[in-house]
Length: 255
Figure (cartoon, rainbow, N blue to C red):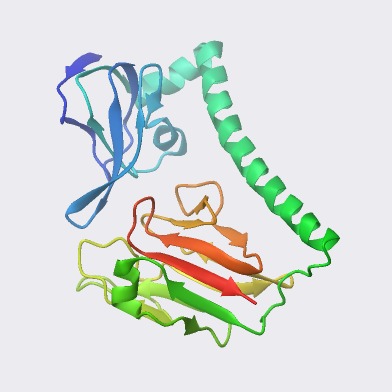
């Protein structure tokens, strides 16, 4: 079914069942994730791009809202029709495979970059970070982060060490974070957002399935990204908790 959609109209809503796929034929749509009463822009899509196909293929609920950024023309394809179409149209199946391949290549590039950095450290005589370096510090970079945790670096005495926020009135967490940030709604942080831990002789940072993800040294982590953890390097590591544009930016320094 083909539709003309006015700018600002919602096409798919986060949390709804994945019963259809959208093919954008003209115009652009925005992909958003809700955070309390606010909406966080995750990206956009234009002509020739499918939206919602992964939810249909995996049989899971929508994990984002899709809204028309301009007037758009879209084709709505029901789940059963889309799956049948994929099985009957080699070109479409090829396009979807290319998209998944691009995501996999992104993961491989990230891993290759991490491996190359480790080799460069070894060639320079720099050893991998020990399980518990002599100093691990977390420091707020942005004004908002400084407002909630202070100006002075926080010395991390032992691992694992978890960072999160105070749970809301209807939220429950299995355990409190080591660093609890009193962020008011709407939230960018999750109650258990990310964790520092030791593994394989290195210190790692892992996103704990947060709603909006974590970015470490420009590498996005979380449930909507290919990987959820990366090893930290010696020196300063840039950490953005809560996705692109989040006010919660930190440095985690290993020395």
